[in-house]
Image (cartoon, rainbow, N blue to C red):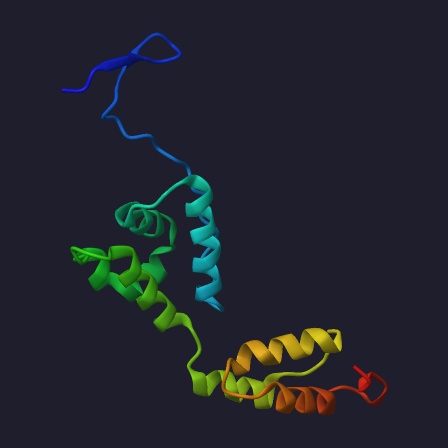
Length: 152
């Protein structure tokens, strides 16, 4: 049996009690769930959270209901192992653009607008992943820029 210890207010506290750590879960980012999970995992690290079940329940308690409906099978019957990893992979799979969609955006939807050319190139690299070489992206980016910007 664990020995109780004195807390700062004089009440006995059992060593077996679990400390609750607040995690500030950002709003779910449908446009890039992988980045959202990276941000959330930084919160887990800074809060000292390492248990899979704590991570899983933090997501379930924080994400909007309409998002959770997409993974209701995992919510209603969580796996015995890797609950967080299973939930994370499914959400990323559901809400991330397919490779085909990313390449289509790259070829049809990307434009300079009010972005700097370097920001346009970064956006194009994000969409292309490792499927398109940097030289081809730079060339495509230069073609998307007005004539005065083509020196970068």
